[in-house]
Structures are given as C-alpha cells and as structure tokens.
Image 1 (cartoon, rainbow, N blue to C red):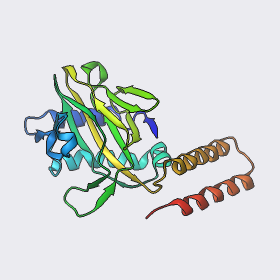
Image 2: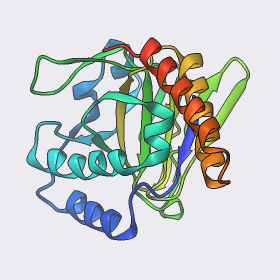
Image 3: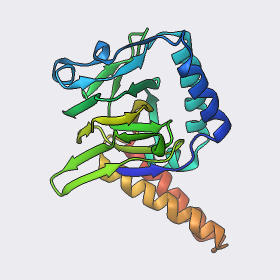
Image 4: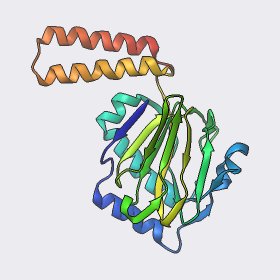
Length: 228
C-alpha cells in the first residue's frame, strides 16, 4: 500500500503542536533510544520521550483525527495503532535505509502490535527545511516524499525506506505503525476498492437493492478475512 492522506490536521492543530514541541521543556531524547540493532546504526535524529505527558497529549490528537478520517479507516481498516512518536531532524541528521520491525510493544503495556503499515505525518512546512525527504524503495523503483504540513503518507512496513539528510532548517514529523484487521495486503486492497465503489454508487443514487447486495458482499469478505 502507498496512500497519501491530505490535511489530517488543520492549521490550528499544527500550530499548537509546533508550539508545544518547540518549548524548552519538551523532553527531546536521542532517537536511537527506540531503535533496534539495525536501525540504531543508521538513525540520527531526536524524538520526544515516548511515555511523556506531551507525547500522550499530542498523540491523542492524532489518534482522534484518524478515527474521524474516512479515507484512513476505509483503506487501512485499523485494529491497533501504535501511539504516535514525534521526531525531529536538524542539519546533518538522517535515518539511513532500514525496514521497520515486524512486531512492536505498545509503550507502558504488555500489548504487542504487528506492524502491517507505517505512517509519517509531516508537521513542518516543506519550505522551512531542505532535504529530509522520505524515500521508499521497492523492486520497481523509489518514491521520494516531502508533503505539506498536516499531510500523511501510509505505506507497507516491510518497505525499505530512509530519511535523507537535512541540510537546512528542522524537519518535524510524527510516525507510527498500524496493525490492520486484514493482514493480507491484496485482500485489504480489494476491500478498499469495493468500499470506494459502494460510496461512489451511493453518491450517484444507484439502485438501492443493488447497493445492499454490494454492501452484503463487502461485509461477508470483511468477516471472512478479519483477524482478531
């Protein structure tokens, strides 16, 4: 999956987050604190301490907006969402090519999460820094991503990816992982396509009986493929 979700956060929410993250009391720590063996060798950034009140407060804002976002809910079908982590890259900082770990422990709990999907929510305006692009590699090539503040990219956690070195300014973002109700990426894509078709036909005021039949087909597949 490779999906852009525009304007997850509005300007007021973004401004509030940036003010909170820029205060002298914000608990920034070395980003390698949460990196595995592979990631620690190539990770050079800072992040807000995961269990801090600030991380929980700002993370809850994002989680609330995710629940309200129809595109995210339809495409991702989330079962569990890892609490958002907040990171920043100053000049010379980067995160070399890596893959995300397949399983993560929810901070402060014994709950584990399978990382089906990764998400990066950009918090700094792209014109405020140079470099810092998220680059996602696949066997078909690479995608270079640098989005507007408030926009989010969702992609498969098994993808090889990196954050290019920042050469000016400060790149600030939130990152997190999602365990979907649907483990299989192909099945998830089929459900997303079917849901989108139902929504489009509903807007066009298609035959109500046919819409009910399509909805029944969608939910039968969802029931068949869901893992709880």
